Image: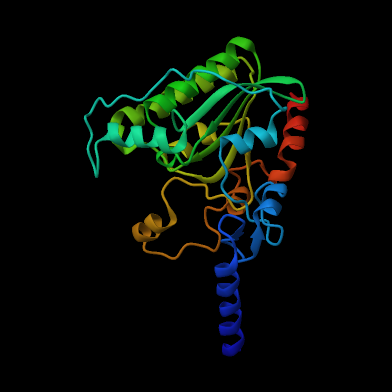
Length: 277
């Protein structure tokens, strides 16, 4: 058995060395070596174990929305540095490096779009922009697109992916929990559907506010969903957590989700849900 495992490892290492860079990737869940073209055709999910790879807003737009229907809104809102915050680098420098490396203007992208010809307000969080952290601009853009949905009386769909509040903005960041929750109360009052899709990971202040306030709350399989991370909780309560704790399946079992939907079925399910409303 030891020989078999060592041989298997040597074969995998040899294959990876001989693979041209960028053509293949390894599933972090089951270890399957996947041709990238095949991964893209399978909507960035593993054909063997169904692991959902993290993807960005562009990919979600292509997967969920009607082709060519998305129009970005509120692109002129940019983060400031009211606290003159410095950690390993000044906050302003961190923002500039994010603008250049990601091509994005914030940790959330907002706009109008269509699904099966139906008008919707759409938002998608960008985890590669400072971990999808929620600062004052994320809160403001969320508010503006929710207000747009309210004014136009159209459903609002958001894809969440976040590590939580943005520490560089301290209390300004925490204020967004109340701000975003307040506009969602207005949507509810006017019976405007608000649909949330939780992806891996959705944690911290986002899960503690608009991430868990949907009329319908959907998650992708295996997504990490919670407030504090499992390691922090274990250290606090000094107990071993159950298997799969804070994964989408565990969260659904305990009543915090409505549905878990495979990425390949997400668009069709959203069409069905929109028809309900």
